[in-house]
Length: 240
Image (cartoon, rainbow, N blue to C red; front, top):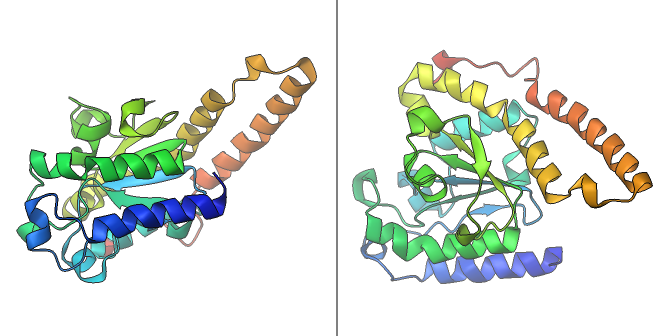
């Protein structure tokens, strides 16, 4: 797809989400929250569901958890408008309760279509409900910071998934916040691994393989730089 085609396809999904009545969550929402970001991105972050601020604004991760997510991204010198951010369910569960299985199932086709359109190299799960979609049966305490192939049935046909705690959990627990900064630092390496899987060197001609190897080395160096926090952005649990 071209940029314009992806943009139009994502907006079509968003329009359907905004008028969706597939589950009970539409009865109590203020605004649905389809997701937002760069249609050309390689990285998609998937959270659990909208909170109060997201429900009011119709945008994902705009409260305190969103502020922390932006801080995480800043340690990689990434901005939120360079990635795509969405959730497992697109409407706020009342009182921020956990989404029910039937609500997750009702929203699943929207997320699947978004992933089919974006074709990301890396899906970053935020929290246990997102983890359950992409790493079924895994426990967040054991899976965080790890990577594995994504089931193509999710819509991401050729991607890796990287597990993280939800930023809201990091806000509540300083140890989880510190762990999350460590996990974020591994995201560039996971992205490089996925790029290598998506473009096998073995299929290239000798000259092309040499060029690919050189490019990979350059990209690796860039990823190392991405993983190093800027001097003015330091992990600090006392800020929250």
